[in-house]
Length: 348
Image 1: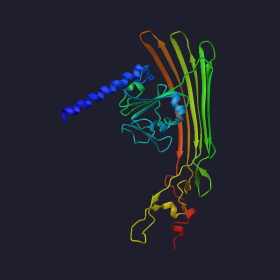
Image 2 (image 1 turned 30 degrees about the vertical axis):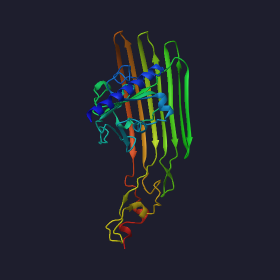
Image 3 (image 1 turned 90 degrees about the vertical axis):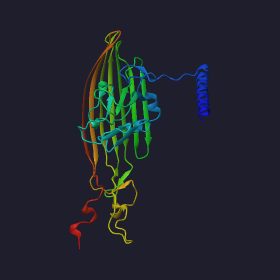
Image 4 (image 1 turned 180 degrees about the vertical axis):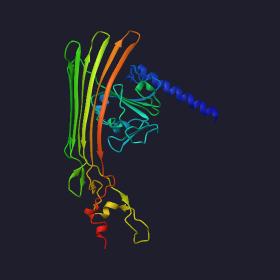
């Protein structure tokens, strides 16, 4: 058995070499992907790290708009979010379940080398990016904070010398309207500028049976502005400012449990509790009497100086980030006693 196995292994190796040689002879080359996973521009094939990279063109062509979309396309990355201010990011099974504002995350999230410390600001609309890099495995303080899970780095597109513009329009059911745009170009001989934005509106596909109003609304606005000053042949300064304003509506929580002793002798029937209160069984309908909301404002700016010294580059990054997050939810998803007529006042 052993000689036969060795022959098969040798044959497979020769076949692989022949395929590779044929591709080279035919002039077929693998496109080089340049990343800055180690804080310097390198080919993705040359770095000793487990990295998944998404180019800006791929993000736009595949309609990748959020961290959830990144998670569904990255091996070993799982993303879940109870709300936009409570993200749970796990890489290779290592994550943080603590949802407090001061929780120490196992995964570092950064934008243009600036660590996003507040969990309430880590989930944002993805737009106007040059690439996204997902590093799996422990990372050191090169990213502003050491992590045991990995790092997710968002790299925005930079101002260009030539006048460049791009626009995005998406419309759909329930009043969905997504608009996005970017314009970039030279302002003077050594000053370049760029402005971009993303606006999303959605009326919601959920419905509250108590008041008849729709729920699940989305109203978000994100923007970014940059100035690139080429002070000299070897010194450049990038000024960046960005912000986001989210005003999202009610969510739908449907509890499931028993309503009492059943007639067939079972102690509990596994039926939806709110069905006993008049729900029609549609998972898109709700009976919660308290309206929930998600309001968030994010703002930040940074100044990055690059000084090329020949054999090395001196880089200085100064940044300020702030966020305000207000979230309320009727977690039980049940109507009030006054609505259902169930309670001590109605006994007997």
